[in-house]
Length: 391
Image 1 (cartoon, helix red, strand yellow):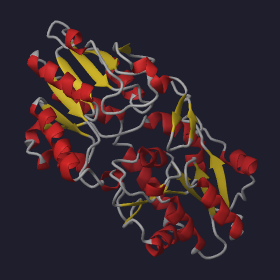
Image 2 (cartoon, helix red, strand yellow; image 1 turned 120 degrees about the horizontal axis):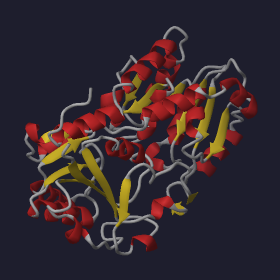
Image 3 (cartoon, one colour; image 1 turned 60 degrees about the vertical axis):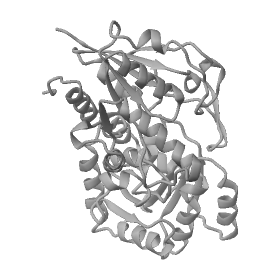
């Protein structure tokens, strides 16, 4: 069997991509090598938005061949447009080494260089990125530079792999033909999150947290930062009629102190701050929740929505969250709102909490996410590479 030799080019190992890379590597007709610019995410690093040091507790390099390219990748703790410096691309992206290259993103100069070198070498060039037009982006000179960079990259790409509807629209608006847009939906490891959620002893976790077994739970699990509006959720929660459900905040960030102060001042005994929780812990909190809320703006996707749906949460989010278009059917598995509308957010929460409505919404979430996972990604990649679909 002749294998397609595929290079996956990414700035650094990402916890959400590792399970996908393992599944691609398991295909008998794909010979995969992941080329990374930096290893910072595999060690302890400071995330300024979480306002703390992070060390992921899930394997990010197991099950697939990988290589860290020479350069300054081991010396940095974050990724910027020109940092880290990276070398070795020209030596690796040759016809003698690979048949195809997938460039994961475009906001580092190395990605543009990789696409240009691969195209020049006669390799098939694929691109998968998160870019959309619904988020706030650069204007003026910076905006023109951004569009010039995107245009240069697209001119060296044979096929764009859309992560969702808004990402597909991003390509179409820049002149990419529909037949040159494939599909690799943005996803998490559904099987992992579903299994871990189902294995959770919810009663024991409620007891551990001191929660009444009969009281519903609303969950926010993300960074406590301004553009995600965790404060709007708190305002909407206060408007709910008594007895209120619990509201759990999982995460850390710049707004934590002010949120805690508000809760203390208003004596909201149903609100709990559970701090940052690592990847292995999150499924249990999704299993505990009835409703998951992400009231953000400027959210290109929002993978926490995928995670929560695997545990059967009803979803309340905004039309500024990229995943809402593809994953949340208004009134069926949750609600999609305009950001900043506190009254609508409170009404949506109250509607989800209705006993005759909530179970159907939870079931609809499970069913929708079942068809938006790693398997669909691998199938989309195989189509782009000219390989037969999996049985």
